[in-house]
Length: 339
Ligand code: ADE
Ligand code: ZN
Image 1 (cartoon, rainbow, N blue to C red):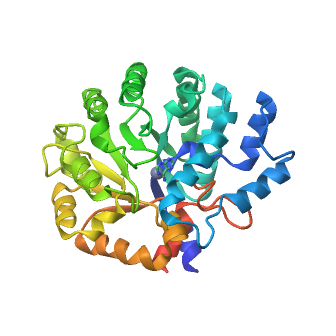
Image 2: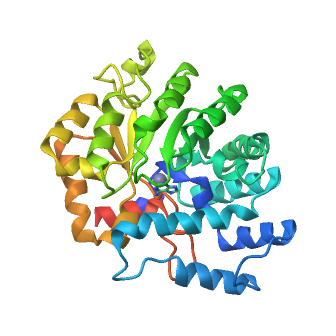
Image 3: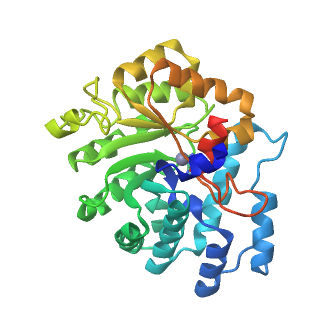
């Protein structure tokens, strides 16, 4: 059996996936039609598919430091077609079906409520659509958990308002994350919100994106302080060490999303290893804009140092959209890596 098929058939988990980053041209077109929303520059599904294939792919020579900001502009603009509970339900269910096709058995997915509430969509509308899809997921052999993500280029007050809106759902969300534009938006800006998330009993995670300004400081803060004191692990969590990483520091995040730049600094390698914090890497996305030679040696360094890493697809509708228009994901990422 060739390696791609072998990896494809392995049972897998995916822990770094933005559900809004799975919005396919087909679903975006359907929602736009149903909600009577124009998509700029596009008059048919065929034209929209072409836009995905031509405009959203990273081009050779594009400034890598601008890549995240440029991607985020497209990412937020595209989701304006999502308005109703059904839209969020179908968005999530579409990816649950992709997960099944890739033999992903466990999916921890982010959602960005502020990207919707800031457009006038109710928090409950988003939540109820996603929770309906979560209920359906076991029918496809997939277990889904939701991570609420704070949009870090919005204000600290907006983050606080969002965590309060989430309170009625606190038993249905497993963690608080932090995403979007890292530039001038350190994790410390949201410490108050992360402390509330801890009081809800949630895990804590944060994006420390690749090659962003001050990312080493952001990693250090997140690993040592974000969200304050960690929960004491329950006895069964400690016993089952395959499922649970016993925390070695009293305070800080439970994991870091991306965090590839930990590999740049011996003191960060040591700290992250000591903290027993895992990194959710998305190497297919990075190698598109940084080139494989700038990515894979770092991934190998992290792994050899003993830092737990997982491979994930991040925003598969945009970042690893293949030339054939098929959604790719964690299976292809893992297969690429094992080659
Ligand atoms: N939101 C969606 N995808 C993201 C990414 N890769 N980094 C930061 N924020 C995001
Ligand atoms: Zn991400």
